[in-house]
Length: 181
Image 1 (cartoon, rainbow, N blue to C red):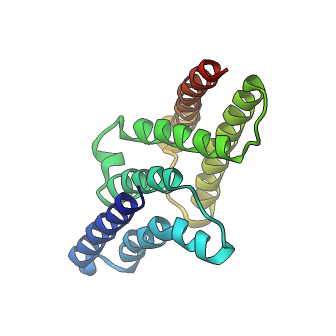
Image 2: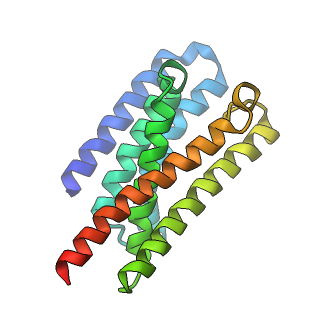
């Protein structure tokens, strides 16, 4: 798994550098937006080094897939604008990702408490992300939440599909833990 993660990181970084080189004439804001993927894709390795923690290889794998989808495909390649359902796919995947991280944070508990915690953790992460987008829209302009176009519908749908992703994860978690006991 560790080798697969390194390969995914390298692919993401190479794709980003190729994109950056092709957009050098589009201005500093575009270059910064596209080059920020280097930091976000490398974040698990930075966290491991700075905080001397060992992130699970599964978390790193899911993180790299998520960053490739959300940041590279969604933002850099503009799939959010080109494919209407892409945003919902990414937010559903984020619900699964944050549910998995929530599960890793738990000590062994009763299955129902764990499921409640996992879903709550995932819902909080979706809320925190949408709040971050909202604050960025206010501070820097723009309309990442598509408020002008949809009102609050886009934001609410993002949180709902993340919730659905966490429930899907918890169904698997429940089956796995009930079969064990």
